[in-house]
Figure 1 (cartoon, helix red, strand yellow):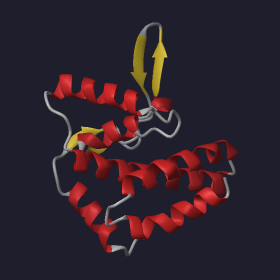
Figure 2 (cartoon, rainbow, N blue to C red):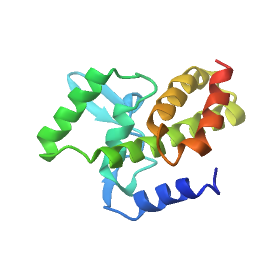
Figure 3 (spheres, rainbow, N blue to C red):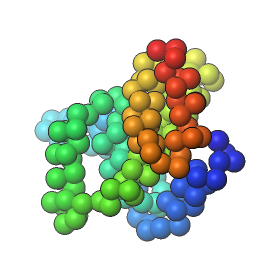
Length: 153
């Protein structure tokens, strides 16, 4: 996959554009609610990047598997704050990159740390990623890997 031209373009396009401070792991496990306040944790991935990456991390969170209606509510909230919706193709590309990162993290933790808890989230993440890459240049490279991950479901 590292040699795939479409994925190399994805890396380049997302890395060469707008630079904002992003959490890079902005998902449900890192948002803590305590005494009526929300707190963000786990800042080790904090860096400059596309702000849409954090939105994609929340919208396509394998831990929660949001419905389309829930995703739409998040997008409405984003629009209220940013005064515009994210460009759909850009959000999709951020979601693709984010879901690949999540799947890689799950596999790494399973293989190296032997923590099985993450295995339950692989099928959801793989299905989400299959959904995002469908009809794109990335589908050819990723579909066989994702279908293999789903075979063991």
